Image 1: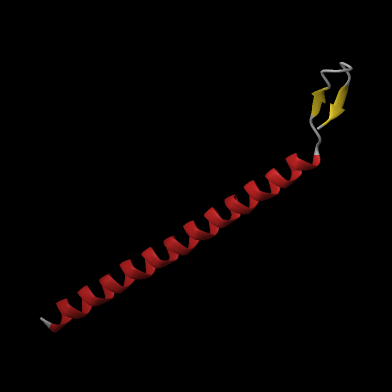
Image 2: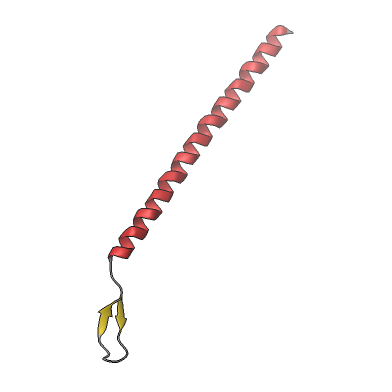
Length: 62
């Protein structure tokens, strides 16, 4: 019986270790994706959009 308990404990430990490493990997990937979205938003603000001035009809950055 003690062998079964030890095997069960080691199996449980392996599952917990796998779940912990998977959670770390997922959180790291989510953080990288969030940083990429923030960087993309910052880049898109650097490019000015053109808007038409209703008084003159000319396009101006805005």
